[in-house]
Length: 319
Image (cartoon, rainbow, N blue to C red):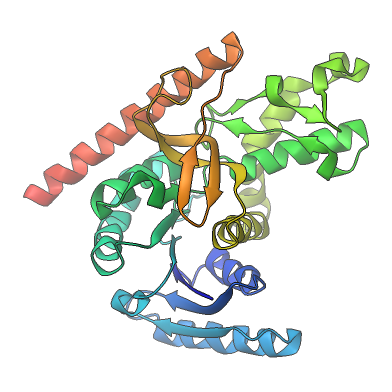
């Protein structure tokens, strides 16, 4: 049985993620962490979740704290804390501001729970995953981000709708940045085990519109209702379940890569990875030439942003 700590639990995504994670059989304790001054909110969330668990018949303990040291014993620390993206704001605009929040959290987790795993949700998630990896001083296999997992699910749903098939029949993924330079892998997309390009309907597939829909989905939700909640919350829970259940599933998350994708790497970015109880392990894949070019551009964009943020953060810390 496992303990999971959610850092940034007073936000909408944190609250719903806690509820979704409570349905995982391997989880017997959820710790909600928030900053000082949020005690009454944390208490209210804890009571509300407790009532929900009782109504559902879930035997999961939920507690709250403003002291991250109480997270000792957690198998996974989920970092959702940060300034949320506003309508019209690019994820990368948030980078330095949220890095100031993520870095000290990662340092503390690396000190109090060096054998645990850090799961980053805070945006821009690829850059924040690199920040968490650097300041936690943990192994790359222990630190990962939500990355393009949710983007891949969004693409999967749109393809299923177009071809009028059950969503489980579609296997596809998006790699690269969780943002504008994301790269859909059409070469690796199948429906019912058949390459999507082998379907006559594929020639009429509005590829550009579908990709733009995936890119703009989060922004549209934020404009319409203020924040994304249910999609990210369920995506978070599915990855937690994959780790704790030792499933060995291949999912697309933000992870540190070396040479797994055409020798392009040395940065945290969305890639297919084998995920189990031991951690997150990017797999070696070969792409079509156009996908290689697009992925390289995405990596260079994220690497430049990551280097700039870490350089600025280090400069601030030296002052």
